[in-house]
Image (cartoon, rainbow, N blue to C red):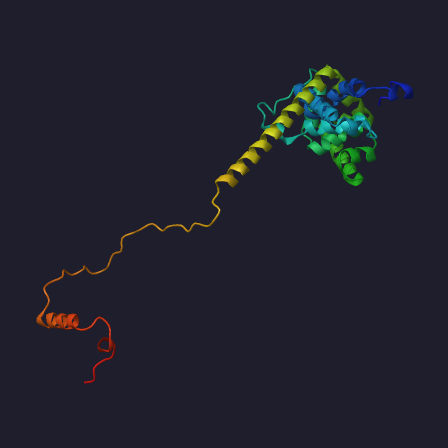
Length: 276
């Protein structure tokens, strides 16, 4: 991507910031228009592209040495644009329709397609990738990609018969994307926002790790070192007869007590029974 704008010698001397800015200037404007085809929303298209380039800047060594840096960023932008979480955002179902009725009809037909079919149609008939490249970017097999493309074309042609011609479909997709003026932000703002977000998540991860370590240390400090059996709570016992009151001893009991008192505290008389 950079080689198209610079000579090999100039490319070798580019700093990471210069290389990123060159990639952004080359790809961002067209990528915003492409994501508008996928979402039908101006703000979501710009947000997806900015998020993709922020990811690219955070992983710049990997992206810079990728075989197709533009494809890497495009795949990230498409993933963000078609994320199912957007449906839970306020006004997630609203769109920004174009003023022309024909373009508006095409946009409605596109947005009714399932996201994988819509992405395949935009890549093949809009961007102009061939079938293997489209399959690789959508992480699908070539037969599955061809099946998605065929069903997407049939669905669009059913609503708009004049778009059964693939050349006319490509022309109309290009016109729809070019109709909306969607300028991208400056690359400096994208890099600054990405770096700020990286610092925030790094500090959050450090704070979370410190919290976990502190909680673990406190648990080890205050936890018991041996097993303490739980004490069962007391409860009343019902159904037992009431204890009788002690009364005076009978004559026989008194005689037996006197006899026992006279006997020795220990000895054969107390241990061996008497023969009768």
